[in-house]
Length: 121
Image (cartoon, rainbow, N blue to C red):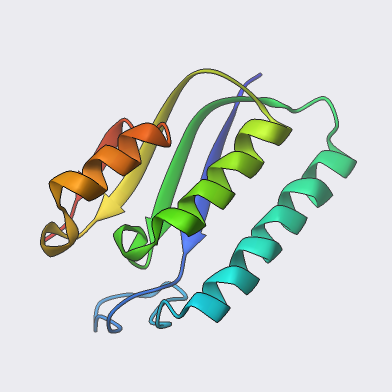
């Protein structure tokens, strides 16, 4: 059975009063680099225990504020996903804040395979 991945992105400009998730961390390059390394290790650990679970039907980037992520971080993340999993026809969603969306950024999202946006207000 294909998997659906939820990848929590705990980075935000500020912690919202209503948010119960682990979030509110500033998206500093050094912290993002460490976090992407942890995500890579998590993927490898999962596949070590479930080696036959490689087919993915959807990925959801939630948080936090995933739209704050740099193209460099997203490239590393999606490279890891595509390298470790079987990805055919996949719905890929990113949560965004309206003030983060630009034409250039949305083009980058599309290039990474993101084909759905969850817009928050």
